Image 1 (tube, rainbow, N blue to C red):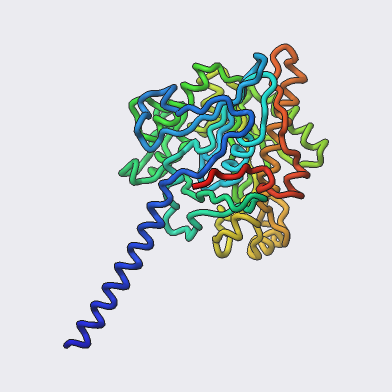
Image 2 (cartoon, rainbow, N blue to C red; image 1 turned 60 degrees about the vertical axis):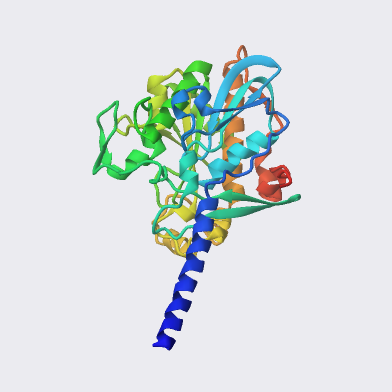
Length: 377
């Protein structure tokens, strides 16, 4: 009896230790990633400054403002709409920590769905965080969930009904930030975040909005720009500019029958020109193998190599994969090309930013070369 009691105590102690370690790791995800104010940041606010209904909630999030010396147009960059799409999050941070505006104003929300960064998607086996090496030491970033943390918004309905259109979707899409626009001031937490972003766009009269995403290699809309009809000219010029840099990218029109997305609702409900961009991220796909930090960073997966040979993918895929440098570089460079295209057509209302890292430079030096030293703890 005593032997069984000792064994039970040891097992219980082991379970308690494992629970404590797992709990501490889980709670650590609630701590926001470190983002350093770059030389161009003139002010940092919270989204609740435009919609007070978010104040004190897990949906409130940072808005970095980079204001040029001269007036001009304005741009909003949304990173982290889906926190398990790290290239968008990192590209937004690269702009915050490097870019200096000359003319016009840049608004950057690197963690659009702040709640989604505090948890992982269940049953995906994804890492909680990943590390980018920099010349000044490692920088650690969260690999979160596609959707708002269910702890912050529960329960999901059986069917999600998009408020402004009445379109019906799976109940879990009620926590998908990119299905909730234009949002509601008295809606769910996710809808309130959408509403807050819309209020920022309206109150600041934002000229261009760019929403940064990633997609699985088997998804048809990949390495692409999706544009609202009124932003199609800007998107077309951007695609041509990228092709001249040997960056292959497709152009997709915003579907009228798919509601709640930035490239549709922001164009319908505000005056901004909305664009959404996708890069190829194997760590999101259904055909992948082990989902670990290496896959997030390198994009290398033998099962996707086999799928490419079988003709199952919509993007070229070989043993080199699609590393984080390529994916961040595409986003950073595409935004720069959007600026160039805008300025060619609108010299009377320019958007001029300096110190935007080049695509080849990011490929050669890595993303870490464009991240500032984190403050000492």
